Length: 212
Length: 295
Image (cartoon, rainbow over all chains, first blue to last red; front, side):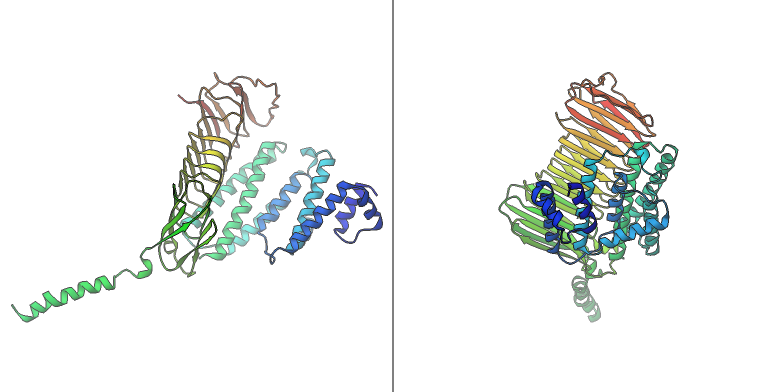
């Protein structure tokens, strides 16, 4: 068995009992041995973590956004497929122990694949890598509108004004990105704006749940 | 003199006066309540304030090995708890009554800490002010401004709409905001990362040799004022904005032979001031980048 084959086994089966072939490879390959030890340690530490906490929605958005931008995962063009991928991804994170292990595995595999394969050029990445991020954020914003605070406190007013500014900025960047899809600088600003929006919506939802 | 007049003047009035003192017309919970606690520390303390309400946090230093937390809270609808575990001091405000109005959720804090102290401060609105403290600090606010004077360490400031003014700061500074401005004045910082979406950025000071400076604003002005003795490589880029170079006589082509490929989609300016010891990256999406030399 080669290193790449062992990675594949890990991707598909996780820490399930390894085959004799895999174990034999591990006994001879120090790199893979360390890799398995690291993952095992991560899972062991994860078991000691306290009860599960539902991470805020913006975490998914950020992780997904990063993976799409790095070309590690590809955007699904059909909404239905995207939802299914997203739900599966989200389900993986329901349990905190599994979440930690999965995230670690995803990042390790992503790191390995990025270090071994040449990066994709922007043109190879789908035309609209943001479509499901946009729909996710829109859904979140809609939810927020439903629970929207009537509060006129300085904090809530500031949050609302800033959300409006973020939306205006995103609209501006999106317009420009459509005209010049290969403009890296605009894409960078757009990505950051989506992340800011996700964080802001999350803060507003937290606040809506705890205050007023 | 009639008896009734005497009674009115000598008995009733004092009684009425006393009743005002004992039962003031303002409800008790509306009056500000003061608190003060002292904590002895041994080494470099870590002070954490998590103010879920609104209010100002002011931190000053002294030479004593003691942390003093003084403050006021607007009502009984907000509680302030303190805890010490070794050199870690936690101050947390929490809402006791969910029906509290914003004005009843205000808690202000004044801290006096040893000169070397680490800080983690969070508030919603109201100024965060830190003066003459050395140590890593994380400062977060939604709508309040953050003013720092003569502080050093690894400084991380996050706001939604609040602005940062950092005067004579040293060490490493990170600022992240949506609409807040950032002003960095007379710094001795060797690592600076400023990010704002719609705010303005002003850096007025020297660039430390080997320092890294990255400043980005989505829509605002990014202005850098350098001195004639400065030495840095400059990389300025904007997607749809403008680059206003008012220091062209100091800015020479890159002397290190590094080829900068200007994107065809953006306006860029590359150059070197002096021998290019520091690295300065300025960027805006649609705002203005202005580079000028101080008088």
